[in-house]
Structure formats: structure tokens, C-alpha cells
Length: 347
Ligand SMILES: Nc1ncnc2c1ncn2[C@@H]1O[C@H](COP(=O)(O)OP(=O)(O)OP(=O)(O)O)[C@@H](O)[C@H]1O
Ligand SMILES: [Mg+2]
Image (tube, rainbow, N blue to C red):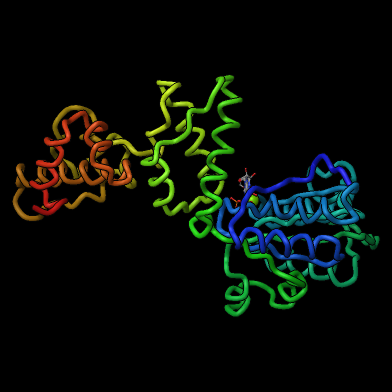
């Protein structure tokens, strides 16, 4: 069977391969599936694979993010509405359930569906019927549900924040996706693949590979945004490379990292009576930076400010001191002296 839309996730780690086998087993069943995983682990990819590997593959695959809409809009979006159901409802509109008839409906971020909507979804799962908003006609649909979440739904159900009966029905079986940090075998494979794709996109001839140091940095990072974050990091590393022949050595994990990054909660003007020294970064000195108490101690303010800048620069460069020195436009020895002075390294 050749299905052009069938997504083919990449991976060779044991946890990835066993998840893929579970998906192949589950796909042909006409049962709801719950996909659980941290952000960026591939939940949507898995949902579409479940659809395209099922007998419904040539029927609609419809998606809706339950976190994207307010309660009444979500209801109308899922179940449709009749003419005049609410202000602005000038004609009948079919909802996602009807649009997904004979196919699959992917409900993303299901934990965000309000209780009333959960109740109606429960009815559709049980009986396959519902009414459009503002209507009384019973609509019958044949839809396979795949839902996704990155939260602990059983804990939410136990706390009364999610309907336990809906959870039972949605979770005929559960696919839990392993985070990227537990799939070291996949990391290099994915990074290489993404780098090649980006090289093609930039119309460059060759991808010169990564240095061992870059590979070690990728392996040591904890990837909170998983595969999506890896894609961004790799694509950034490729496009920023200046010497196209040299292997990629520079990996920037946090594109926001900058000593000039605005403070999380800018301090009110009264709390900062003295502007910190030029250049401009001083104006955005991190609000979280410790502020000395008591009489205004200029030297202590400067010391804490410098220490915070050093700490952030280190963080932005994954604690790699040579890169941090380059980033701060210092020599390596100057940086080491500063770090020692501020107690950020021993010795
Ligand atoms: N194993 C994989 N192979 C190739 N690409 C992958 C793989 N896993 C995820 N991706 C890619 O990573 C990105 C994120 O995947 P996806 O959108 O499915 O994640 P998600 O779990 O739904 O994320 P979120 O929780 O943020 O909605 C997509 O570009 C997807 O194609
Ligand atoms: Mg998603």
C-alpha cells in the first residue's frame, strides 16, 4: 500500500522501535487511542500515522486543538451549528465530528476541553450521536478518535478535573512517547537528517558534518522541547555556519540568550533609582538578579550585575567556557579570572 501522506518518523532506539510496533498493532483497530508525551515528542505525527495505517486512510483526517478555543466556540467547532444558533451564525456549519465522518478525528490537548464539552464527546464515543449547537436533529457519525495530551490525565481525573468515564473510553489503549533525552540513539540520526534537509533547503552542496564537541553538546542537553527543539537547534547551527567546508562546531541552544534580554518583570522606575552603567544592557538588568539591601552600595550592585551577566552567558553557551569567552568578547583567561572572582568556578 503506497500512501503518500503516511508520515515515517525516524528513530532506531529500542523505546522508539517498540512505540512504532505498538502503533502498527493499534492502527487497524477501530478503537480510540490516547497519545501522551512531552511537547515536541511527535504526538501529532503518531496520530496521523494511526490514521494512515488504518482502513480509514483514504477518508478524512481532521484535527482540532481543544486548547485553542473558548468553551462555546469549541462546542460549535466540534459539533457544528444550525442557522441562527448564535449571533453571526448565518448558515448551518458542519463541525469537525461530521467532517471526520468515516475517518479519524484528532483531538489535541484534550485535557483543556471543558467539562460540558467532555460530556458531549463522551456521548459521541458511546453512541456515535450528537446534536448541532442550536439544533434538535440527531446526527450520527462514524469517527475514530485519537486524543493527545502532555499532562497526567489519570491524575487530573482523580482530582475531579477531567471526566474519569471519558478517560476510560478514550484510553482503549495509550501510546506514551519517550522524551528525546532518553533516546540518545535517535539523536544523532535525527540531527544528521535535519542537517541534510536544511543544507538542501539552503541550496548548499554539502553538509560538512558535526565536530565531536558539537555531538557531545547535543548529547548532554536535556531537550525540554524534544524533536521540535532539536530541529530548530540543528537548522540554526546550519544556517549560521560561515565556513561551509568546516564541520559544524557552534551549537546555540537558546536563541533568546543575550545579555540584553529584557527582564522577566521589569522593575518599576521607582525601584531602580540609578541607571546602571552604559551600554544599554544595564537598562534590562535581570529583575531576578539579587539586589543588595540596606544603604545603596554602588560597588555591590555592580558586582552582582556582573555576576548575573556571567552566569547567563555561561548558561547560553551550555557552560562551555571557550564559547562563553568568545560570546563576551573576552579572552579565555580573562573569562576564567572573572569566573574565579565571582566564585563561579573554584580555584
Ligand atoms: N521520530 C521523528 N522523526 C522525524 N521527525 C519527527 C519525529 N518526531 C517528531 N518529529 C517532528 O518534530 C516536530 C514535532 O512533532 P509533533 O508536532 O508531532 O509533536 P507534538 O508532540 O504534537 O508537539 P506539541 O506537544 O508541541 O504539539 C514535527 O516537525 C515532527 O515532524
Ligand atoms: Mg502537537
